[in-house]
Image 1 (tube, rainbow, N blue to C red):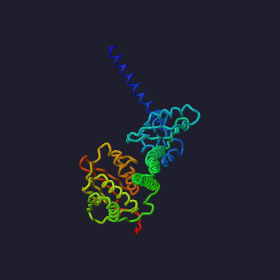
Image 2: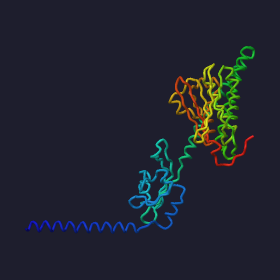
Image 3: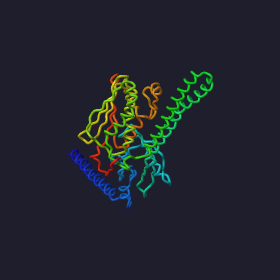
Image 4: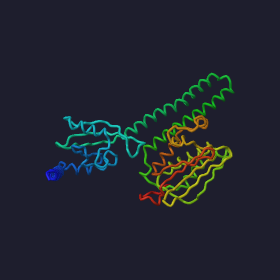
Length: 378
């Protein structure tokens, strides 16, 4: 009996302890729930366009703006990046707000990074307010600007140097008419290439600075294709290349007809340049069931390798640099096409197979699906 009595006492004491522990935990939870954010903080975060959130002493997120969630700074009720957590801890012990430019990995889109100016500041005695400004696009544009300037310097150096050397050779050969004609022809080719390169740089800069949808016009795709074909017909006929158009369905898009004609012309010009003599270049148009106008340009060239396909639309990138320079290519044609198409709310796709040619397809929203008033273009 004494053993049974002792066992009963132990069990009873354990039950009492569990009841008291549960009651204490409930009291603490109620106490925490009674502590609310300072007045107005929640409303401000709800209307904030940038990323912002508030954390409690355990670094649990109590309130977050939509942008903080969209950029992946906050996942559930947790701060997603240890770098921000470290900044929060600094803010708890420092007199002033802690601020730092952070380079963060974007969890949902690993191919890009976030460059954020993050500022953490104490909010009352319990909370810390975190505000973040997204500088990703600013840094990206700065990198693009640096690369563009470096590329232009490199590309201009070759023809300018060639013009100088040819001018010297022309002067030295002034007594030899045959040599004068030879160097004069070379000088004309290099100056023409320099002029084309300068014009493409101006065109690309103009495309990056303008928006064709600010003054929308109805553009007839058949007219755009006709203009592009006529601009390439002489060179194609000289090499025995047949340009065939198919898909005569009337289709219109919203935008700038001159820009679209330049884009299609560049694709046709590339197809002619990289197709063998006596072959065929095809241009097809179609309208999908989803209201997308497709313009496909197909050649019978050597095709493009998978590695080159990933970079084919970069400025100054050439699949065959030597051949491109011989034919007067500037390396900007496809970059211009990409910018024109993107400015018109579309995209461009590439299919290619080595030994079987390539197909570039421009995809644009059909005008009938546009919800903006447009003017007819002359």
